[in-house]
Image (cartoon, rainbow, N blue to C red; front, side, top):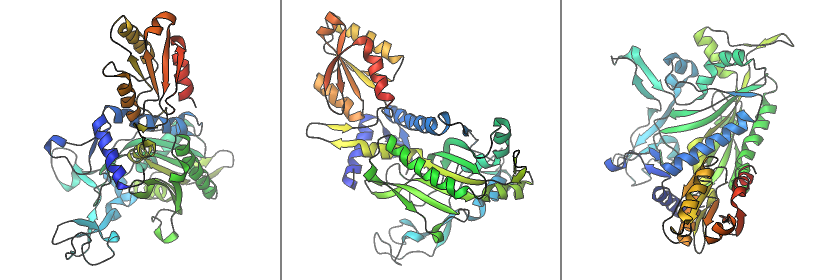
Amino acid sequence: MNNLDNLEKLVSLCKRRGFIFQSSEIYGGLNSCWDYGHLGVELKKNVKEAWWKCVVQMRSDIVGIDCSILMHPDVWKASGHVDSFSDPMVDCKSCKHRFKADDIALDKCPDCGGELTDVRQFDLMFKTFMGTVEEQQSTVYLRPETAQGIFVNFKNIQSTSRSKIPFGIAQIGKAFRNEITPGNFTFRTREFEQMEIEFFVKPGEDMKWFEYWKNERFNWYLHYGIRKENLRFKEHAKEDLAHYAKACADVEYRFPFGWSELEGVANRTDYDLRKHVEKSGKELQYFDEETHEKYIPYVIEPSAGVDRSTLAFLADSYEEEEERVVLRLDSRLAPYKAAIFPLVKKDGLLEISQDIYKNLKKNFNIFFDEKGSIGRRYRRQDEIGTPFGVTIDYQTKEDNSVTLRDRDSMDQIRVPVNELVGRINNKLNM
């Protein structure tokens, strides 16, 4: 998918088939907030599980954490968010549209040509109050990133897991930013989910690990089916780096609305840990038992968006063919792994189909569909990315075999019922 017309088609499919809905739709919706439907929540869960398997389960040098969304307000003072996490903003006096000042090259509104207001700072953090009284002392923030929860728990995790540098801490969790100009479907939202690693390394070895994680994260998207021509790196120029960063590169994807960031990999140096040492007065140094060195580690941070990744997998897999629309999702990410189709609902075929469904359901997320012509049922599953269709027909009664249809090639073969689990597993363990 490479244009905005196709984005509209994808948005339409997501609503029609139950992937993604506008939040609070019956009340007119809430801008830039989205709800994941019965298929969307499965796809999103599979994306998160694929990431977790890659960076935690299959490695011995990364452990997980799940931090509270609400944290002590001093965390955000130490990190610099309270003082500097804002964007310059302007409003159009005529049409009332709001823009980031950095995005406006002219002194006129790009939408209507009207006069713009003076630039003012727009706080990107959501504030709330803890307790029963709304006063300054009870102000807390919805976290704008998941990273700080990892940094303040560095010592807890390092000591209890007995991890030795280099090692990482991974987290999947919600974050919140009061964006000025959210949009492009689920690409930029005010409530989003991050998949983030803070990888702690010895100073002096940081750039080696920076390059390592760039390649690791780029290849992860290829491994799960994103086409290489739709991915690229964008290195940040020195003048564009965040104040805490020594180096940064984005993995960009060619979305229907253009090339945009999918994941960032940053060398955050020792900035965050050092700031928390200064603010809290607590010791966050690492002691190397082999060399007897004591130092504050540098940190390499691969930070991916769950919602952006899910959108990229949807967009990259969407294809329109002469007779069908198909999502060529990687089988490991597909919401349903197979769909069961009784050819007819009589002569015992329905009951046989239900038995097969119940047995497969123990191993995979499976869908049962008995309504409509078999061709129409195939098309429905193609459109939501189901890799296999399993048709139970009269021959099943004779030899206990079924027709197994492949989503991508549409090829059909006869398979004994007792081989179905193995066939599907082979596809899922590519």
